[in-house]
Length: 164
Ligand code: SF4
Ligand code: SF4
Image 1 (cartoon, rainbow, N blue to C red):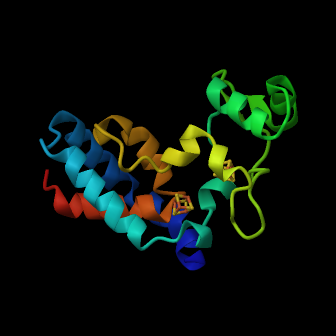
Image 2 (tube, rainbow, N blue to C red; image 1 turned 60 degrees about the vertical axis):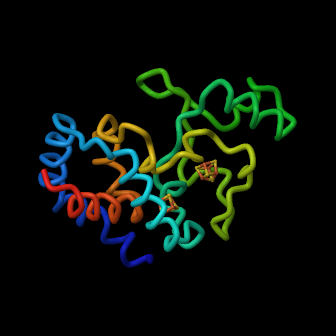
């Protein structure tokens, strides 16, 4: 797994133009059963992917935190939302709340998430490959294939399965 993760940025770079063209066509003419196809591809891939052997998303990128995420996690940590923000978060150029540092402060050495039960919505949904109307998040997916081995595999299988 680690070898694949190390190679992923280059593999994703090599596929970038092909993926970009594919997603442009997908956006124009999404198949009727796209939601169903993506759910199947996502489930198949995650049946054989052990995120605990990877955690590359938690190590290299971070989620956006919604107000609800902040409230829930702060309560769990017995902090006031303001204290939680000051200790762990910062605002990015677009005004979104993100982690002050990567790897994420809540990632333990064994790749477990220390706040798993209350983790941000974006962490629960990452890499968003079972999202409805998947064609609408192509820019995010183009980025995620360089971070997430499962997303990379899903997009490769998707291209094989959906002739455009
Ligand atoms: S979601 Fe993707 S990047 Fe994150 S741990 Fe699982 S396989 Fe790795
Ligand atoms: S909160 Fe948990 S799941 Fe989300 S990035 Fe941090 S360690 Fe990973």
